[in-house]
View 1 (cartoon, rainbow, N blue to C red):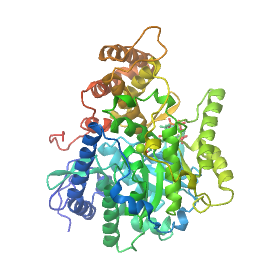
View 2 (tube, protein in one colour):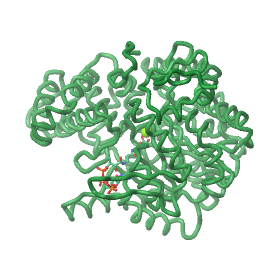
View 3 (tube, rainbow, N blue to C red):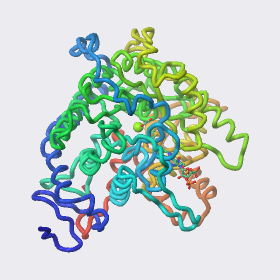
View 4 (cartoon, helix red, strand yellow):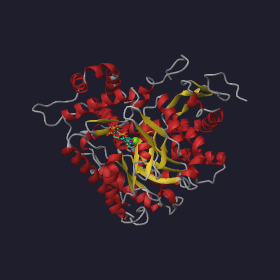
Amino acid sequence: MNSKPAGFYDAPEGVDVRGRYDDEFSEILTRDALDFVARLQREFREQIRHSMDCRREAQRRYDAGELPGFDPATRLIREGDWVCAPVPPPIANRMVEITGPVERKMVINALNSGAKVFMADFEDALSPSWENLMRGHVNLRDAVNGTISFEDRERNRVYKLNQNTAKLFVRPRGWHLPEAHVLVDGGPVTGCLFDFGLYFFHNYAAFRSNQGQGYGPFFYLPKMEHSREARIWNNVFNRAEQWAAIPSGSIRATVLIETLPAAFQMNEILYELRPHSAGLNCGRWDYIFSYVKTLRAHPDRLLPDRVSVTMTQPFMRSYSDLLIFTCHRRGVHAMGGMAAQIPIRGDADAHASAVDAVRRDKLREVQAGHDGTWAAHPGLIADISKVFSAGLSQRDNLIGAVAREDAAGIGEDDLLERPRGKRTMEGLRLNTRVGIQYMAAWLAGAGSVPLYNLMEDAATAEISRVQNWQWIRYEAELDGQAVKVTVTPELFGRVVEEEMGRIEREVGGEKFRGGMYREACSVFVRQCTSPELDDFLTLDAYNRIVVHHPGAEARL
Ligand SMILES: CC(=O)SCCNC(=O)CCNC(=O)[C@H](O)C(C)(C)COP(=O)(O)OP(=O)(O)OC[C@H]1O[C@@H](n2cnc3c(N)ncnc32)[C@H](O)[C@@H]1OP(=O)(O)O
Ligand SMILES: O=CC(=O)O
Ligand SMILES: [Mg+2]
């Protein structure tokens, strides 16, 4: 019997839902689903807390001058001959994967895009407001059930799923992000356990029969720094499989190697997840961010302009080559990353050169031995598929075909090699312009946006933020100036003022005044100039999008 009063969620003992009530959301936030999430939270919260403490401890060592490296204690894992569980047939071919936020129309477009996989994102591409998260869960449930549709009244267009759709992977948030709208025993539930738990609870059965051919569901796991974090995920998966009474190893997950410490832990991460692994992915944008963050106390490691930190920088190439070698040795996919270019309307030449840049990036990836790659936009799928299917030449993947033994010797120095390039005033300006506009979009509810013809999301914006912080902190000298110019708080202050003026001119006065630009500017400037580098742009900003109902104190 349901005894909940109208307009309130039916929460089990110890669970307090503070997000806005909505009848549709209550189909997701059922008592049983909340109970499942709460069980995960209670079982794993201490391990998560310990892992976050270990991250801070490792960072203290890097701040004291140490560099990340391979762990001598796990040498036997790196040298051993083990492999991961065999690749499930439905995801043998992952040549092109589209990614995007869990927004209704985009979910349909992504599933219909012709990509092999759609990674539905609760992380970099989503601003995790209550509304976005809960609508995202409704959308994914309808997508897995095959009933999702969307009506665009203005354009008189109805969106429905095609006969053949991409396989769905879901990326929950990173371990560091809390979900402040749901408390378990008085504390916020861990964001990723909330995302994973609700999605798994509602979709595992339908997914396995509609999409997974008896396997699944499938996940992407972001922003890990150590194999102990992968071990927690493996245990979460075991627990979920036991609860659902599905075979062990049903759930599969691809881990993004997108932090500098994790690059030294690829084997260990795969080892921990070996019954559940679906390989690794080069999360290049967060990786660049993490390079700066991890080495924030090392003034000899200043990044050049963001635009010149590409995959052809030796440290980035080494990381991708080592990932391919490691994955193929362990029998799993080595996925490539995201080129930031997107189709450009109204300028044929610029469009052609953007598509060409994507093609070159993908050609480099498949020639290096990546089994598949990411696309940011449906308009790029055909071009990317062409490059990858030529590179795979009739095979589903390159796992057994390309060993990359030549990468076996990639060492600590290779992974840490200093990026080369110029630091310019335009780099500082662009970081500032992009960082503020991205933050304004995020605060207003959009986690991925086109800016200056590139895709921007939380990971790319992080680079802008930490690079500014690093240049200010160490008074970086700018190249190409007639007189010596160093980046000081005063110079940055002037740049912010001028770039805010430019943003206002570019977006127009009305949009500027109606938008979140000033608030975004204050968040961004504080973070770029604070004496201690904030761990994540989105952690502090999250407090600004938490809305408790009815009327409770919103800050964490
Ligand atoms: C660093 C990382 O983590 S990368 C992974 C996380 N980041 C992402 O996933 C970003 C994914 N990409 C996007 O969000 C979008 O492509 C953006 C925001 C960059 C650009 O989006 P838009 O401005 O809407 O592009 P545009 O106007 O060209 O879109 C044309 C159509 O394609 C759709 N579309 C664009 N990108 C996507 C996508 N990734 N998935 C599904 N549909 C998409 C639009 O919804 C639109 O559909 P419609 O014609 O039916 O209305
Ligand atoms: O998540 C992907 C990245 O590049 O960051
Ligand atoms: Mg990322």
